[in-house]
Length: 451
Image (cartoon, rainbow, N blue to C red; front, top):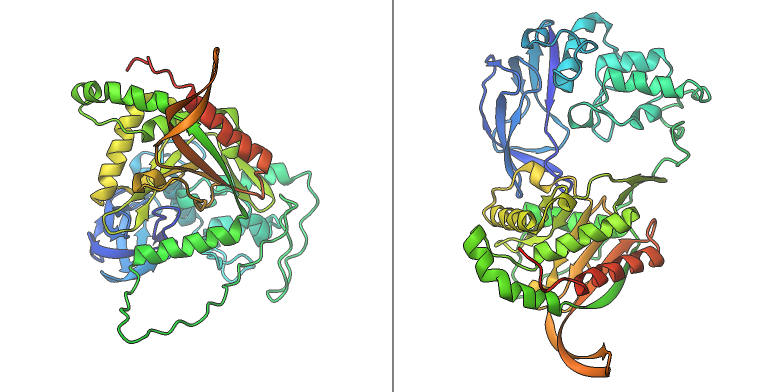
């Protein structure tokens, strides 16, 4: 027998906690692989938590209506040594793709049994909430892998958990590197990882805020949980990324005229309204392909260049709060597909029906401040992205237009683009060229384009 910790899953990049709304299983009940154990809710999404292993629910660690931090253990599942193999997986080494990583790791834990590490240098759970199984800790200590090195390994298991194969793969590439330094005493500063020259990142200090007194007649309104999350993340982003914003004014007359011409036909044919947002997203995805270093994240002194182009669209909710659903692989969708995706995500956001996957893994974000009549804005970057685009309201303006016969003044549909970017990795040249290229694509839109 072995115990498996079921942890609160991550429900989005800006969600740090969730509320247990209903337990679907009681203590002593059998749980099948991938069977839902409980229901949870955040101010953004509601979801069920499936079991990555099969066994018996040994203990609930929280009651219904309790708020639990992401990464915290919420239940203990007792598993048999043959639990994973009964699902058709022979061993983790023989069929790694046929069993979930967490279930295969649980099998390894059960097989090791008495070999679990008790009180060694590697803790079961770090201060950041990262969990290491007994098997992983045992291998790490036998091979002299420090906690700092272990923290630097990208886990392939459930919720990014480091598995046996992750550690063994790391050891193969670590062989030619210098031997790791001895782990310092708990009170000393940890040694930096041998995988990176980046120094350990200090914990951000909380800035003091001045006291605010309520005066007679003032109304005190407590922030709801979603507003607190948004507030904390906005402060964190400003603290993390030095923001710079570049502005370009674009002539979008061709886009306005084309949409006016096709919107009724589009609605009749597709059953969907076509807005400007999918047109802007299409152009942004195209621009990202031209400037892929905008599609990155920062990890210490490392730059992670993203393969996928996943564009978040900031969406205002009826409550007044904000959520950012994500269009995955936006560069692979045509305009019809983008329109349907934009409308679907916006509709489900307003109805509070988004799933956790709908708000994760964005690589770039667009915010349509023009929908509120604003001509421009300076948006805050959603971490861990490095840039965000705000599109302003489209207004008719007299503009100087160059023609073969000379310059003329004409009434055109103009719009400001505001590009905020992280100056740690995006300088003015790249940030400015990106927004200028986006404007070029919008201005070159074919007014005779077929649906």
